[in-house]
Image (cartoon, rainbow, N blue to C red; front, side):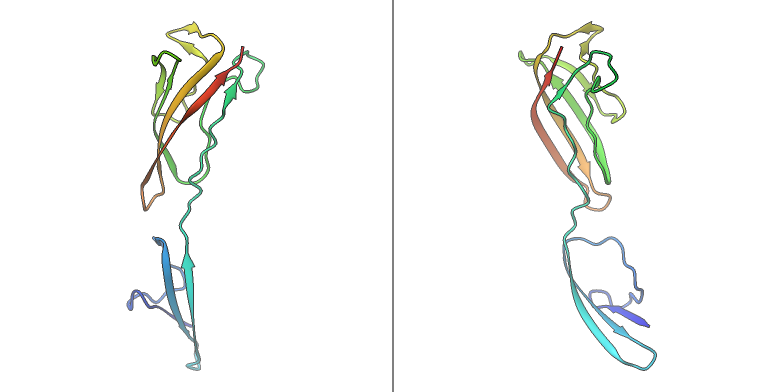
Length: 140
């Protein structure tokens, strides 16, 4: 078989990479010169939806003891900041493996509502920046 991707006359392979959103046309020719063609619509999503918890319980029971962002796909945490109700930053990181344990400068913080600002870079091709703002409840 020969494959002709109509957006690139030089591309003669069954597999292509680096796609962005849009319609792609392919023409296939077999050994007997029979042809067929198809249009394929690509919607590039790349699973850019992180899981951002709305509560955690840092009580050393082994469950939900640390606050962290979890995600699938090709995402990079660029920055995460946690603020108290007075706007004071109590946690900051650009490392997805660094988690917040409900302390600030070694002191245990009171239970209550805290606020996050999270910036993530999504996708290995498009490099789309996503910003999330919201609140998290620290339960004691």
